[in-house]
Image (cartoon, rainbow, N blue to C red; front, side, top):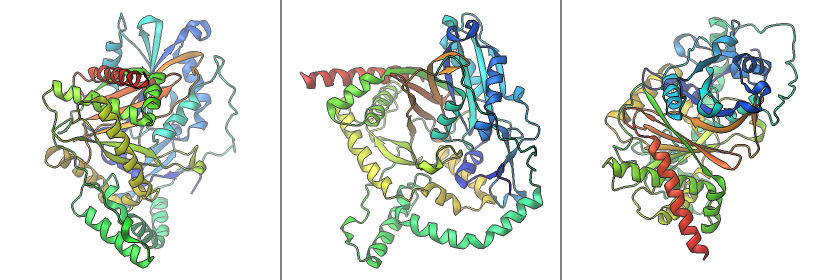
Length: 494
């Protein structure tokens, strides 16, 4: 097939499978820009459209649409959209006066609570005029089937510049021929051709995965996984004549039912804010931990306070999924999903902030040890075992069960995405903040994603509007937690 045509992995397809009228598969960001640095002091839709159009070839997902294989017997494909219309994807709206942050978040929630049109490339950009203080905002939506955290950051680097003057971008290589879009028979023929390799690939992935199946995020907590992992680790140690003292002994991690659980509504709400990166590093240095340990502790303290206010704090710790990129150097610049994750307890049961920090440090270290034993493509390997024809039904059923009847595999997601330490510009407008927006699902109705930019840690919390109508206060609780840790750090240093 043509290089312009790319098949989704099972993991990519999972973000399509979970979608229904309440669960959405897109991720995004809410940028705040200062147009005073742009030519004429304004950022117009025409200028933004011109810049995006000139750089579309740097972002292949932006010009590809989805095509499904007949009968869903294989994973879908991305193919060139031969009717691509930039005007559909880059849009403009304005806030009513006075254009407060609350009005911005209200509008962002409405836009984000709509599924992307699968007959077109799965992305949208909204230029939002009229933000108070003469600022403008830019809301982006891109389907998670096409991007993960790192490839999403690469999209950001393609659209932004390091100077007020937009950089010159080399035009695409033009062969003069437009790639043909495969028909149903072409896709079926490709599936048939790949069938002979399937048993060997499956056996190889089973051998790599099963000894570690109890810590694979997508199957964690299922009955029997811990026993399978221990038994197969013993078999492997015997065959390889290894010392069995290091055989997997992992403490079970079970998420409590209730907090941020249940079936989510179709409506999203966001909390946004920032904390100084310098303060986070001061805490890190004082206690000898990692930046990510501090970030997760801010979330733990904030959720503890929030759940106490709601009278919903469980006695046992919440459980958090921390995504980890497994993208290699060779895979940089490609798109799709190459991500795994650690599942660790979140110390919402501890009262003291410093105790929470040290608990997180230990939990994250144990989580990294468990994760390091996993094959790099473990999440992809799991998806291989479910036939594409039943994959969507299984994914949706599992999510709904965790929202209705069973314990969820985790209560929340905390993702930390490193960003640039220098000023960025879009069409000459200086980027002031970039608040990431993400996915929630049945049984897991809160997501905290953090992106560092310049000397700031920008926080974006995605929640269910009906379950967490006061989610903005969680950002304030994170800021309070950092203040408590800073005070403890200064006491330690005196």
